[in-house]
Amino acid sequence: MVSTRSGSPSRHPPPPPTPTAGTIPLSGGGGAASPSASTSAPSQPSLSLNNLLGIIGTTECSIPQARQQLLTTLATVAGAKDGEVVLSSFLPDQQGKFTIDPLLSLDPSLHCLGYLYILTARLSHPFQGCHNGYLHQLIRYCQLFCSRCDPAQMAFAPPARVNTLSHRFLALAKYLSRPSDATPYLLDLLKVWSRDNLTNLTAVHQDFVEACVVTKNYAWASEVTSVQLVSIYKEFYALTYLDFLRYNYLAGIASSATKDWEAAEGFFESVVSAPATAASWIQIAAYKKLVLVQLIKDGKTTALPKYVSASVTRAIKQHAQTYKIFADSFEAGYGKGGKLVGSADKEIFVKDKNHGLVLQLVDTALSRQILKLTKTYEKLLVPEMAKLLGLEGAETEKVQRELTDEIFRMVSTSTLSASLSYLPSPTHPVPIVTFLPPSERYVGPETIHRLELLNQQASDLNDRVWHEDRRVGKSVKYLQKAAKEESSWGGGAGGAMGGGGGGVMDEDLMESFGVGSGTGGGGSRKTYDDNF
Image (cartoon, rainbow, N blue to C red; front, top):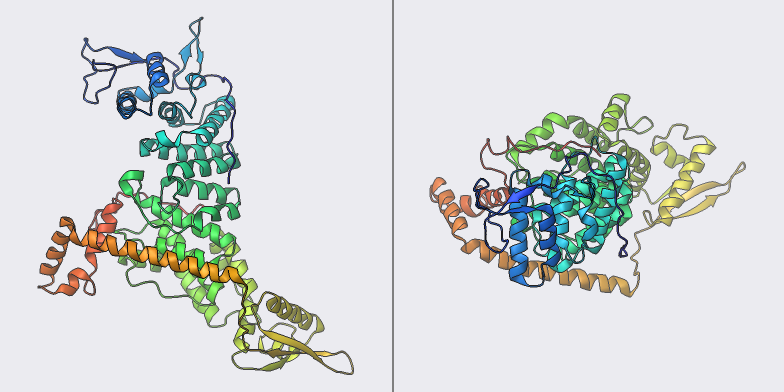
């Protein structure tokens, strides 16, 4: 659990954006802002930053009507011309110089919504050209907000503002080469924003996991990635299609770093199999890592699910052919007594940031070959085993000793079930390996407890799927699509509900993330470079 951090930031020099305490025209009536108000009507009162601070400081956000009025005012100010500039500006001192920081008069535990608007307005400005004193102070403001923001007010915060805070906070920390300054506070923000329910995907998920990946704090990332996602509320959390891809991709990287290969395989497969009308580079990057993770985990690759988008499949064949050839060679036993990776392939793996996974795969190659021998032999002399494995210098004592050490390591980690004895020899004892059937192990009451917990989770998920299926099945949108799909298949029910096409559910998922149907929908979608 991350401890709460306290302390108020001190005053700092003004930022590069023009520090003027401007005014925003509002419609009359009790200070409530109207989004449709004309900004040119001379009869409208104007709201200065100083007056806005007064409204923020005196509004009792525990009263729904007052809270809504404040949100309306903040949204109107932010949406007006130069509204973000006004929100990010400073107040004049007695000499008329804009040096007074409005955030110094606000407390995120009391004035959470106003603080959020002002802070995100500042974060929205480019960092280039700002002096370090201002940027470091901005980091401290982000830390203060994330650790002390009021959960009750955050429940009504605009999701776009929260996402901006999360994204730009991490971007600022990376810009200053201090990503570790953001990591624990992003976890604070994630817990508040998700209402302590990490099963609901938010945009903050990906930022926290990315911070852990950048700082190589992979074990910390597992606090989030180990929680299975259950729900995706696109509108409530202002999620995009790329948020889903990036979170799963980053979670796969973090899981790979902790050698949780099963979890990593699941995350990367989720990225590759996401519905798409045009393949994203992040999906191709995930496929490359998926191939290597499967080889490490099982010694072979698994065919992609049939529901993977045709555009993704084509892109993989075009841009990841090297990985397919490498996997086929590995599975065929390439590397016996020779190099597993050629120099040309190595350049590709290094460029794709996958050389570390390849090195781990090389380390598992010997143990994989030893396990294959257990299917044919019950007992082997170590010198004979070295020859069967095709090890270079199999007849030398050094290679045989290294092979014996590897067998000891595999037995100690329960990878191999075997015993080692020695055959007397005139020169030196010859080790003999006897392969044993895998032993069943009972690790204690915690195993039963874990099984019960998993069984309960499976039951809960089954109930959830059942209710969601009924909800979708009764929706007018789904029934219209089902009828249209059925008619397009000449009245066959299979095309609408399954077997024949499966297009209805794919379209629902794509539209829920804003991925348009048809070839034109994905053309304008952003792609994601493989920076990890």
